[in-house]
View 1 (cartoon, rainbow, N blue to C red):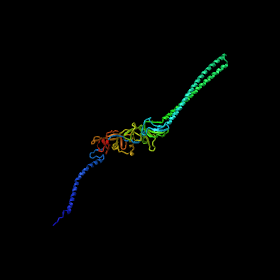
View 2: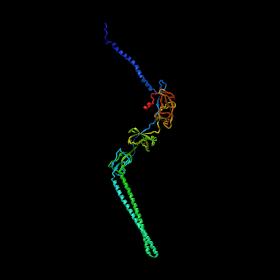
View 3: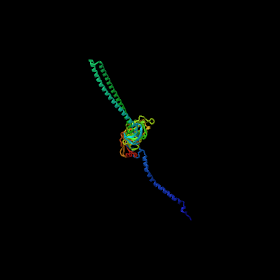
View 4: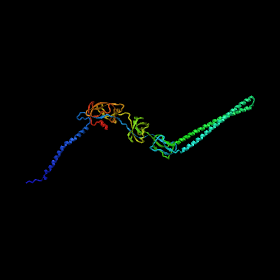
Length: 467
């Protein structure tokens, strides 16, 4: 009689559930594999399409090209130079006479007008000097009056002497006639003649005295004129006690304090004229040939980031910095509102002499053999390329213009005149208009009229505007 073992003790029974689970897991993985493979197939295809070079022709036979829209610009952006603002003119308010500074009417930052009284010196000594000078002037004027009286007296004596001389002359003539007739003795006639001579001498002396007195009057008047000038000068020095502003501007610095003794020529205030503002920037001597007096510039101030100021070059320093080989250039900008102060950081851009032109990548140009022109660095440029960098000697090239829709695009060879080149970009002087689409890169040489496939990486007008 056979006794069967319990199921839990049968080894085959123990392995049967494990085998069934493994078979179920393999069946599940087999069913899921196609689904997982199908999910990964589309990203893989897209990745291969994006990584494929433009020259690859997957199935369609058309050459894939990168396309861009022609736009104007500048090949070399103007360099920016930094400096700080300062008033167009700075003057010092100085004392012209010695005196103690009594008070100041303004302080740093205050606006002033031309002719406005800003400070006052102690003028008590000057007032005393004026009084003394005026007193001396009065004495000299009295002296002139006395001299003029002496002239009048001399003239009166001269007139009396003349009358006496005339009478003596008449008497001498009468007695000489009587002597000739024998009426009077010769001695009496001789005495009359002597009296006439004496009267003539007295008259001559009176005339000479008049000249002397008149010279005294002239001398006295000269002293009066000199003293009058001294009085006027002293009064002018007295007016120096009031210090008036020579310009319309702003107080930049207060040099002296009330109570200080100020000497003639001593500085009291420093003023600035902000009707215009100047900026001095150092420019390399290598770029000095491109800058001239009167040239337009653009100035931006960090204090006013949303505004642009127009100015011009007003001065080019004749002396360069020997260490840095830079030349100070003075730029002046208008400041009618007066909002631009001193010491603001300014960024100056010198305007270029040439206008904007169409700029294309250097890869868009085709060599004569049909090959794209690859960009070269400036350090490895050949002599021919360096000559082509000169805008004064343009050369010819070919650019392929794209026409048609995205799926039916064709290219047309266009001859263009080439200007300067730098950093992988080229100026187009003529032959290409703004807004036209052109090929920037292709995987193989193109032919005129060839149908192409526009790459999805091409720059459409919308993408260029977003950039």
